[in-house]
Image 1 (cartoon, helix red, strand yellow):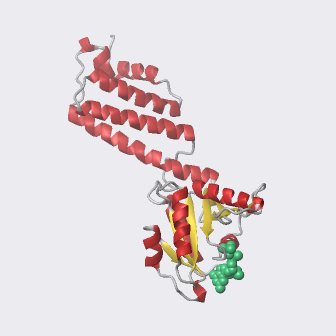
Image 2 (cartoon, helix red, strand yellow):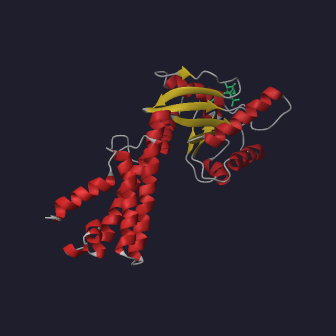
Image 3 (cartoon, protein in one colour):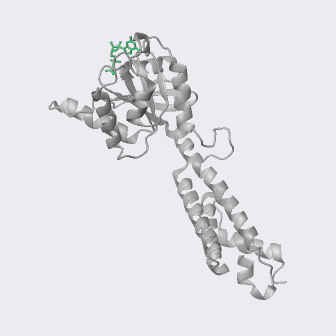
Length: 291
Ligand code: GDP
């Protein structure tokens, strides 16, 4: 394209429009796939934040301890955590997780408790995945519904990846799956007993599936682990999309070239290439211009 624009007298044949569109679509697809790996990259680099929430006494701390015990290989308490939210690092199925056990969500007069509530709310807002715990040995109640509404309000209605955990399964089952999913919305439901250790393996599988679900797997070649690279990819994708729409609107080849050049420059920023120089080199090589 650049060659056609820069050297009109050379009579260079431009790509067929349909071919150009197909190529551009393929590029967008591939860039999008790579960009999607950024979240996996971030999780592997920083650890995913897994926040355990639920009403008092449903077994949140017990669940945290059970997950720690099952994964005692890498357990490091994070300094600076307070008595109100407890945070531990743990490795589940190769994924580094920051497990956060929250205190209550309801404000009280006690200043220490209030701090706990603030921290719990912040943790829920930042979570990559929520484990919402219920005591399965008691009926699903209005208080459970209110808690779910409160959690949802904290995330401003944004889609929240969550696992609904029915704990104390060993004490009998008074809550069924439909009740919790009706109140919360679609999400995986899992019965466990934090005390007896049942259901934990399945819970771990669900945790890793939720965190990596649908994304480029760890073993795939490209993995974006750098925020700057992720942004460059997003900008390159946007520029390619703009190019595609220029093409569809049948604007001039110059307009299209501007978008594509911008995309190249963003990618060049990742690779450390000077795109303009590279482009001219290629034009000269490929089209034998200037002889
Ligand atoms: P939290 O307030 O939500 O952190 O709840 P805790 O983890 O402190 O647990 C509250 C009580 O429930 C404790 O007495 C636990 O031993 C008990 N508990 C927690 N999980 C289970 C479970 O799976 N089965 C049974 N039988 N008791 C449990």
